[in-house]
Image (cartoon, rainbow, N blue to C red; front, side):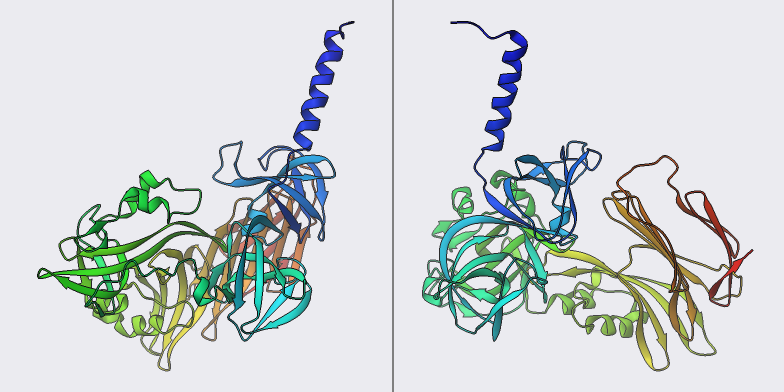
Length: 491
């Protein structure tokens, strides 16, 4: 048999490797809702081998691939038209341009909302196929690996089939298991003579003992393994969550041999952007030797411990804010930006932690709150790094806020006019597509269009000199002066 030349043999091996790679079985399917780049490697710095547009479907080969450049981000390996590459999971979790659906075992679920839309794709912007009324029975056979926020719920998108055979996608936050088929329904933790209580427990020691039944069956690592889910935490490291000071909701209490036991249940979660990942669940009984129980709500308990009585009215205002209320007063940070005694006005820079029902940290809330004789009013919401400065030296501060993502960043300036903050300058830039947008006085915009061509001469910048501001996009510069809350262009 004649041997192939070495060079030909190498080419043949490479061809077979590529073919084998392309023929791997997909673990799911990906749906594209906006223009996305397929990168050659799992890194933003790698080449964009192809752009795909809204409406495209791709094969999902591997999920949660680590970034090759060492950044703290993850990627999904996909296949499209025989090309294999990577899409950042930020496109799914942050930008809502992509959704992955993994195959799952079939389960029956029912609609819990008054009406639930069955959509063509797993997105709130996708076409609605039909509306499913409450108690409609559907069969689920696929779900997204990440959970997404909709109306203060965090859940997955499900691929479902109706009894008429229609297939589409529903948001899982409005689906539930029939009561007789709920996989979480289990009476093993029931204990005779238990009573209903409210509040929460706070662990008083590290790694306390948990019981399936008090003084009978302990919760072991083997038991925890059956309840843990997610990919970020190993069962052996789960104990690091069970430290002194950790709070866990409780609803039941029982007294055995003159010792109180409290039934606790908590799911540990990590939140990022508009997504959520579960790190596992814990449920069982804990004794008063390892935890202290509070009948108060977390707000009531932490308010009693708060030392600054001057902020009590502000705290009550923050606690009553819809969908962003303050529950953990111990996380509150308040500083006064300025005040006017003559008009009884004050501006407060406020931040505090937003917690879910299991006391997991969702995000840090940052607000500017104006106080006057009529009460409290939110001026700015949802900014991160910030500072006050007086550009025109009139004694009334302007406000600067800065935010950044993995590839994009923005800086905004606001003026205080008629007891309200108004934006007069916003600069947005994205390293991913090299775009640059500058908004002036909330209407005039200077911009550089998106481009995939990286250029050393690409500039998107500004410089402050008192109340004078110089803006620059590439080789063009623009001069403005800040007066009376507005920017005026200078020649």
